[in-house]
Image 1 (cartoon, rainbow, N blue to C red):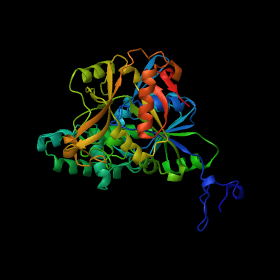
Image 2 (image 1 turned 45 degrees about the horizontal axis):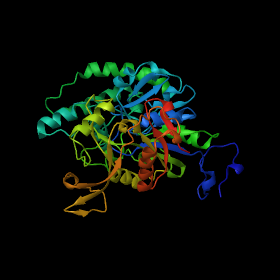
Image 3 (image 1 turned 120 degrees about the horizontal axis):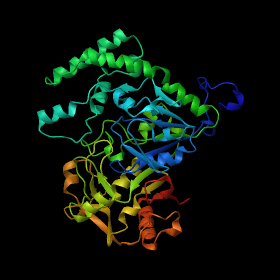
Image 4 (image 1 turned 180 degrees about the vertical axis):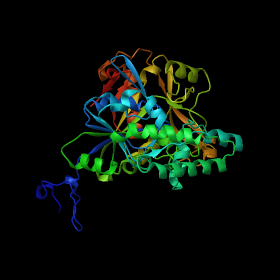
Length: 440
């Protein structure tokens, strides 16, 4: 058995034929993931955990994410940078699986110039954000993306024509040729697309020099973090389980894996190093854009949730669609991710309701279906089976511990916990850190 005791002065991998014991696998990584369709409050949970973290990572997605954090009364909106960047003692890493829109990155302010920000040289570069417009014109339908160029970046990655940070920082003449080829590729697909190539290349060259001091080899960086001195490493997932390219409500999904496997592939870390996986879910359900939404409430309840919850997309500015909590999708997210605990956010938004419903099962043609439908036509047709709870009609926003919550709110929380089979570790009753009640 390979043991650190036998290799005290090296962080090199075990030699061929040797095995690393499970107890000596290195530091564990804590992963925070969305358990619905996004906008669950992941940034708030990351911000809470990041106060004690040494490294905070983004592993996938790009500036299509939108995480809002409130600290000391000040509100921060993040799109590409990890929410944990607020902690000056931690290092923030943009991992291999992330796609970087450089103008958007630098527009997030001088936070990106902080000393503790690191970019993997394998991260992908976003070239344009016009594919959604072109698709809508050609196909007559809009799949509801953020129009941030994320889809084109992942498409070019899969077709092996994409551009990476290491390409940008290498031979710029070679990069320019590849950039022109990529633009030509998209113009042949979408004839109305216009790009000022020389102007873009001029800007990219300037961005490259700003970025260069902060770029590292992401694989080696993470290996050193995992197998060096004890460190608390936090991974901030973007988007959510139901938006995952493979497991979500396809085609109304994002272009990356925003489930737990994305942490491994996006950062180059082994599954053995995954520790706690925290799922984040609202006390109700929201969705941005189009696509099936079984518990959606196109009525006064939906309007109340939208208004009280200030349900407007951080990235798009679009109003979010609102409905009752759907435990079918949360359980489905747990099946994929193996949550060790749940953060239930925005409980206080339900304070004024006379009664509260929770979706517990789907029916098709009057019969319960035992699984989450893969086919979106089927998902559009399901009938939701609800459990109904009396509202607590009490302001919970000042609650700071479990005993401060009204009994009816406690019953609601315990029902959710028991139904999905995962303990609820935090309950959110407001925007700030102090409004997260820790249960254990």
